[in-house]
Length: 231
Image (cartoon, rainbow, N blue to C red):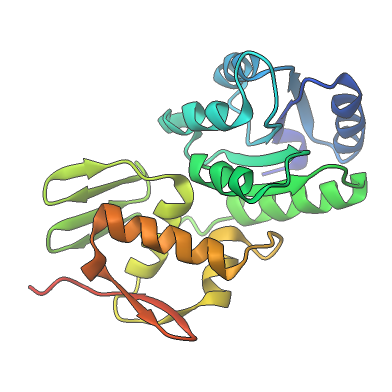
């Protein structure tokens, strides 16, 4: 995909921030669109189907977290890259953003060159995915489908936040293999995103609660593995 084909939607209620980011990303050759709140962002996204959305949290009408959640509920935006760019630096905001389906979380202020670096890294990772990769994993009692982003457990479909889905898909892609924390961080969150062990542990805990504790095994001091159900 050429740079000139890539559509980026900027969502922020501060016009000055929109203009600074717009200028720098347009210099890189991307198509830039903007919205001042979540409701407007959803309307524009429905029209243009952006490849990447840069989203603030604190906005009128509809905040960034709920905007992200609504977008992820639409199958057309399952593979859209969503980066939060916000002044909120609290742990709970960080975790809420990833739970809602974010791919990255960046705090303001950020230098334009650093933001461009982040954008390029996310685009490389998501748009240049291997088209031949497996899209569905099937084991006894559980199906994990990347194209529709659902997990079917004993005939019941579960809706998981994006990062939880990416995590279970990674682990289940090679049952019995121990995935080190560094590998999980890189494959699920990306090398450009700073993620601590606590974030990984929280997502594993939530997967255990929703999917089943017996599917996941902790390898102390190393990482995690997916345990394939007995035939």
